[in-house]
Amino acid sequence: MASPYDTDPRLLRAFTAVAEELHFTRAAARLHVAQQALSRDVRRLERELGAELFVRTTRQVSLTPDGERLLSYARRVLAAHDELREAFRAAPRPLLVDLNSPDLAHERVLRRARELAPDLELMARYESGLTGAASAVLAGRLDTSFGRYGGLAAD
Image (cartoon, rainbow, N blue to C red; front, side):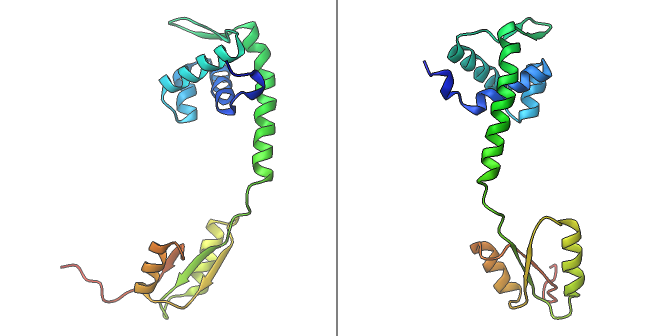
């Protein structure tokens, strides 16, 4: 049996979602997991803590007194976990954008991209054609490419 001091944050998220929704199916949808996986995680948490957290009937779900007590702790632990993860999240790298057509309105494309994604840093380059840009995107050295290619035709 695991110690409650080593409780997996995933189990606390499962518990918290069910506690807030008071419905396993809605909580599973909220967490983007299968309902069976969510139920399994809640049962695992109950075993680890040695406490029943929910009263389950075919018509409703409600918190037990132990569930009520755990909810405030779980929310604080998850908030601290999220804060820790955010504190050490790497700064996002700039997106490398290739503008590969000489007749493309480069500044207009960049301005519009920055309007649509103001939190992203875009670094533009003007050095490759479509063939070079395609291989760079496939190799992970380039994020996107804008341009026109007149040689493409539908057969």
